[in-house]
Length: 300
Image 1 (cartoon, rainbow, N blue to C red):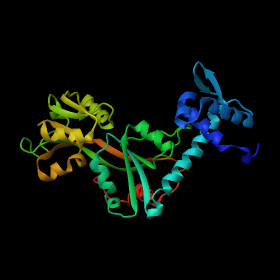
Image 2: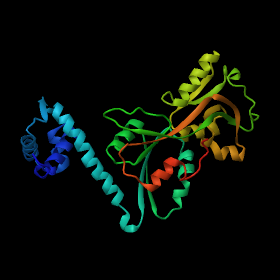
Image 3: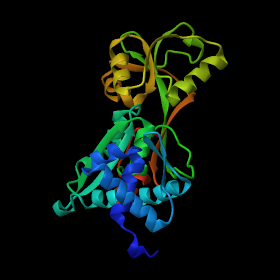
Image 4: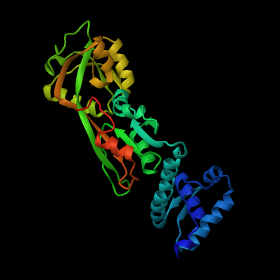
């Protein structure tokens, strides 16, 4: 079969059915009948000379050929989405940059890095926050241009990704300025029995902290475990406990003196990454972001 014989509408319908995994739900999404959708997928199978789905009860299971076709359909329609994302706003003379960030990453860090773009009249930013796996799915479907994360991810055959190291910063122990002297806490010796607020168990910072305590045989009294950095900032400000977090999260409180850095450890560090797909269309703004020239941050 030649390329001009390939019906891309049939391929699009196959793609949506494969993604949804159910003919009836896909038909509803596509505003067509189940029988029409089924007929068009059969026509695609006839053109390709291969079966794409096996039925499993009420559901559909991709065959090996179906998995292969889906891989190419993801690229075809994913790149189409990327094209539409690039074209949106061009009539108004702006470039759209679609950025996802993990929910555990400091908003201050992101704003510091993106600050120069906020005053650029030729830029339109779309900012999303969520779980890393969900954001990576959207990245691979070309619905995002980049994902900002504080952990690296492996590249796999079915999930090709590039991780660009952006920088790192020390993790600090902060406490109320009225109760603590700057750098008055010996780490890890003084952690035993100390009331402390920590990032949640899924955080890379938390894993480093737990390893530090285990090696030093100290057991702090954990008063709070918080995934969201904005909430951890409020707890650091209002609880009176010592809190473990990057200083950028509480940069305003440190400047005002309401919080002070009471201790640090060279064994605790947060790293920042920009994750992209290897075949992304080059966007000058994104290239600047990856090179660090889009803006400065407190990461070092």
